[in-house]
Image 1 (cartoon, rainbow, N blue to C red):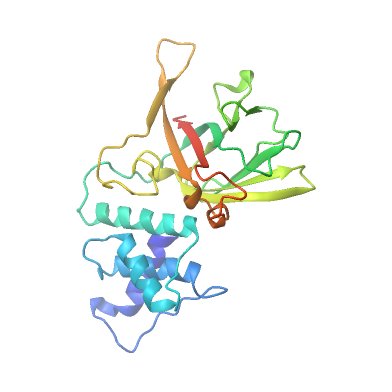
Image 2 (cartoon, rainbow, N blue to C red):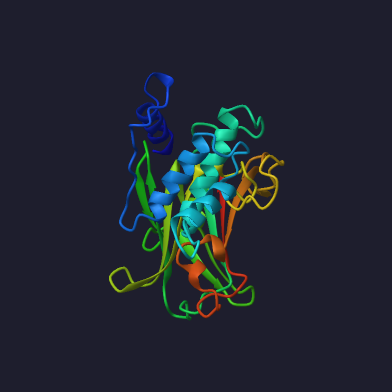
Length: 274
């Protein structure tokens, strides 16, 4: 939605290509800070306020001008999409050539690994996740009761691993495309506790290395290719890995004292092409 929204705002503020100071675009949400900030940051990038198209600069500028404690957009998934948009803009305006962001990048989810078992996930409690994808191909997936997902608690490796049952190795856990929301739970379907969540877009998996963090040069070669996926045929299919650390996970990022999650907690999702 960000791309057409920016175009609509531009057409309103710049009728016939000329800025009209009498026109205003009003953006708001429940608190007027997080989702509002995401849109405003994207607009500042779109309008060329920051010639380098660096999302971090726009996020910082918004935080300083919007709130006294200088904490503007704080939810990791909202920050992630600001960085997605900045990367897309650099491509659209000819500042970045490689790697190219395609209009679609459908993927098969092959496994999910929680590295560092959360304190709430004690032995005997079910840990499961739910995925919802938005866009042209909407759909839902639940690991619990799906029949094709195996959950392994590997205490020695300090991890919980979700992977396909043997009969489903060819199709993976589920197909994903466009915007995807992932929510993790502990407990049953009817008496469960939410652990953490995150959003990502498949178009950027394999584009930005660790995809969202952009700690390294965003135009550097991607390093997300993992070990080849074992197949019955002669060819092996390489996987793409999306790794999100605790500061990059909604809700879990608030655990700064490491009471609920280890300080090195991370989520690793591996994908293959369909």
